[in-house]
Each structure stands twice: as C-alpha cells, then as structure tokens.
Image (cartoon, rainbow, N blue to C red):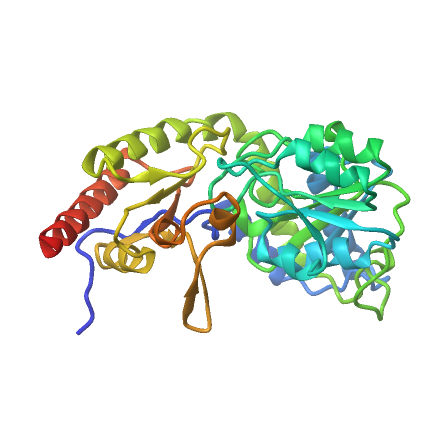
Length: 375
C-alpha cells in the first residue's frame, strides 16, 4: 500500500537541487521549440548563437568575471570541476581541502589534503605550511554542501598566489546564497551549477581567468572555444543564464533564511538537548543546517521524515546501497557514531515557518519514539 501524506510534500533539500524557476521553464520551452545549432551559419543557427552568448554574459556578470576571461559551459558541476582540475596544465603539487565535494576529490585523487578546524573551516596556518613546501594549484570550495560553512577564500588566494600557486574554487553552493565575486577574490578558476539556483539540471560552467593553460578533456567540433567539444545545450544554457541572474538579484531577501534556520536549530535542540549542530560557530550560508540526533541513524531520520511528507538528506553519502560516514564530518574530527546520526536540512527561497513547524513536529515524534524504545 502506498502511503500518501495528508499535506503537500515539504522539500528541504535545496542543497541537492532547487525547483526550476517558472520564468526559466517558460524560456526553455520557447527555445526547445526553435531549431538551431549555434555552430550553423544560417539565420536559425545565428539566433541560437545569440542566445548562448547572452547567457554567457549573464553568467560572467553574476560571477564578476572580466570581459577578458572565459566562461565554458559544461553538462554539470562534476564535469566543470574535472575540466578545471584535470584540464589545467600545471607542474607541481596540488593541494585541496579535506571537505571538498566528491567530484573534486575524484578529480584530484593524489592531492595533498588541507586540514580543517572543528567548525569545518580551512586551517590557514596549515595551508601556509603546505605552500612553503611548494604547490602549483590549490582547490577550496566557497561554501560546504553539508554544513554550509563559508571558507576564507580571499585569504586562501592571497597565501596561494604569494607562493606561486593558482587557485580553483568550487562555488556551486554559494551562488545566490552569499556574495561571490571571482575577480574581486582574485580567483583563477571557479565552477558553478545551474540547478542549485533555480536553473535546469545537467548545466554548469567553468569560469577562467585570462590566458590560463587549459586543455580540453573532450575533443571534436571545437565548441566553447575548443575547451569543450559537443553541440551546446541551448535551452539549458538559456535557463542557466536567467536563473543565475535572478539568484544574484535576490541575494538580499535570501538572507532571511538565516533567521528561519536558527529558529529551527533552537527548536530542535530544545526537543533534544543532546542534538549537535555542526559548524554552528562558523559563518554559514543562510539556508543550511547540519544537525545530529544522537543514537538515531541518519537514514532512519530521513525515512521517518519522508513518511511524514518532508524531504531532507543524510549527512552521510550512499554508494551501492552502503552508507559511509561523511568525509566532511570526519575531517572536522566528529566521532563516527555522531557523524552517522547527522542529517542536512537545506531551506529554499520560498520555505515558510509553517513548513519548518511540520519538520519540528515530525522530528520530535521520532525522538519520542526512539526514547520510548530505548526505555
């Protein structure tokens, strides 16, 4: 028998993906109805090319990329990170933080890890020591996808450049949530994804400072100035441009989510004083709460909340049906038993207090059931 929630589903997993903005959907549908390959020289091809270049300017402006820089469209954040990290022609050690997304970890399997503090912030003193031994590239995300912790990117860039290293930043979780200006920060490479800010899935971009030695990982037709072969996804690119433009414009009202998040955290800790909020002392993006209910596995919490019509994520990652402890929480020095009880709650621009009240009620009911079972 299928269990149908009485209330509409409450989606609190916005760090995994975000709902497509209505204006983005409408624009993409219009483009899908217009044939035209951006590489064709006839009228419809030229029209498609104009759409792609308009979106490229929108992405560049949102990232603060100068006109002399490059925006390379890709099929997603993973591809963009791999293009940046495997395509860059460098000679020397690579350093990456211990809390990077799995796509960065996979692209740099032999990189030296930069440790983080108990709040999930890159240890700048440790980074400086590592740079003293030589490095060609440093890769650090702007905001962590699990805890929301904001990294000191400007200081990381200063230290790395002083040591002669380039800096790549996975900016996928910060765009539309907190200020981010690639040029002002002095970054050499940055990646951003459309579906984290109200755009389509399967669409991302790599931003490059001028004259970086980057080689293509996919070759063929020479699209994207030779950096990434393959016919451009015109509808996806158009949607990306509109979504990132809207997300950056809405940055100030997005900040209201910090109040909702902090109220939620206080209520949950009030229900279970043993609950632990990870990264609580760090500056975080406004929408993210990573919290553990000690003694209750994350997957149990996720399933119980799902049955109550509420969608959140486990703080741990699942692979081939096996749960493994989050490498992010492990890097922060969190004990395995506690890390395995962590869930991530990520709010969206339209999240309401009423929706969070439903989460609080369901979480309290689960805590009550588990306490009773343990008695």
